[in-house]
Each structure stands twice: as structure tokens, then as C-alpha cells.
Image 1 (tube, rainbow, N blue to C red):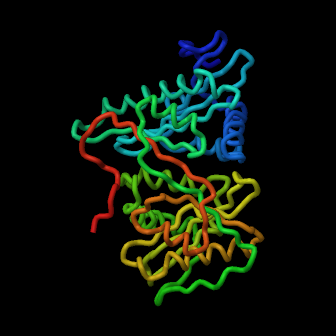
Image 2: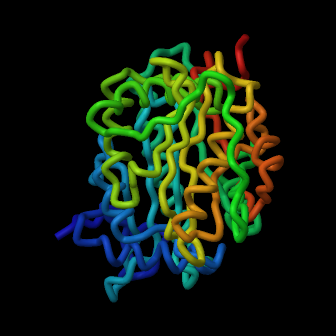
Image 3: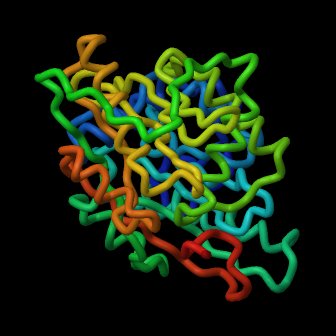
Length: 341
């Protein structure tokens, strides 16, 4: 039995509780209700949520909370994640059943998460900047007001982008010296992780992780139910990984679509058309497998010009998310905020 933690501000019979594996279906039901109301989709599958709860470094008892009503129904769910080392930017993700949009449930969950995020201050060096980050579907205004009332400020935008592939895409034009290699999880995992991680050092928000921690998360991602290593495309220049396109099938949209999870090109191989070639190759493989649409996530102010690449490849914005931030302490910023030459 889960221990009741807090009832302040909640109606009689409602309580804030920690989360156990036995809550999986009830939590998923609340998440689906929220994402259907705000985006018209089921945001994740059961296996994806179950896999996420097994993420290395995630402590379910400490990092997750739900509000449960007297009938056992989950009214809302929140995550406060500190999966980076050092944990200077806790990330909060909030999902509330539409029946409780106008109630105090969202505020109770957010207040708990902010308090939980503040605990990182006890272990961090004094000179580091610390701030909390959240995202909101841009069209959902109640969350905008909730975040701003809690001291968060809008700082950035990101997009979910789609491209229709009802016709066969053109053949990719590979730069000279580049060959495509199929991914072998046993032989190639470490070198692909290192190359992808290096490329993303120029991505806004990136924090360089100790190898053991970063690779553990990469391996977990590789083993997720939606992962399909036959959709991982590795561009080689001799013995060097020049770039990667790590794809899967996304079942969260209205119908399953091809999904480009990570598309990255290392610095030495940029501005040669490699990113476009990897993207077009990915489109072609999804077309060959019968998928009529491809999607990916993009930073609206991407530091390496990826947004222009996606637009040039015929992708369009499907929906927009807004990034909010609440500073807990000023200081030295560890995450990437600009590309350093």
C-alpha cells in the first residue's frame, strides 16, 4: 500500500502519493486523456511508459508522484527528473486528466515537483547555475498560466515536424568518401554513442555526461520496445563515424509513422550534404516499409541550422511546444547555449 503524503488543498478523499508499478495502467489512462484533450493523440504506449520507469538513474519512489481520488482514479501525474550529472537542470513533466483541469490538482503536483527539484541544491557546487525546465504544448493556455504563476518564464520553442512520403523519395546524394553501414548493437554501440554524443555537444541544452552514465542511458534506449536497430543508419568515412540517423516507428501519432529519433553529423563532416543524405535515406527506408509519413522533434532555434535542413527536405511544423525555465540560482552555466568555434 502506498503511503499518503499530502492532502493540503485537495478535496476530501484525494491524496498525493508516490508511484508503484501497480499504478501503470491508471497513470497511462490519465496521460492518454490529457494528450487526447490537448493534442488529439495518445502520447505514449504502455510499453514505452513501462520502459521509461526502468530508466537508469530514475528512482520511482522519489521522482514520480500522482494524485489519486477516492475511487482510485489517477487525477494527475508528475515527473521531476535529475538524470544528468551534475543535476543542474531538473526537468518536470506534468500530465493531468481533463476532469481536473480547473481544480487544484495541477498546482499541487507542480508545487511538489518544484520542491523536489530544489533538493539538488544540497549536492551541487556553489558556483553553478541551477534552473528547472518544463515544456508545454503551445496551444494549451491553462498550462502557460500555471507555469508563469509558479515563476517560470518562456525561453524557447520546439517543433514536432512531419513530412508526407506518399511518393518514393529521391536517391540520397552521399558526399565523397562516405559509405553507409548497418548497425550492429554488439559491435558498434560504443562508437555510435560516442559519435552521436559528440555531435550533440552543439545542441542547445546538452550537458556532457560521464561515459558510464551516458552509455547506460543509450543502451536503455536501444533496448526500448519501440527501438529497431535495422532503422539505425551509420555514415562512415573510412573507420570514422561521420554521422547517424537513429530511427524507429512512432505509434503515438494518429497512425504509426516513421520517426527520426536522432539525426547528427559530427563537426568535421558538416556542410557537405551528409545530414540531408541521411535524412533522405531514412525517408526512403520508411517508404519502402509502407509508412506514408515521417516525423521528428526539432529545436526551433537550433544552433547548427538543422531546422533549415528539415524545411529544405520538405518537412512542416505539425505542432509547437514552448520551453519554460525557473531559475533557482545564478552561476556558471553547464549546458550548451551557443556553438563554440
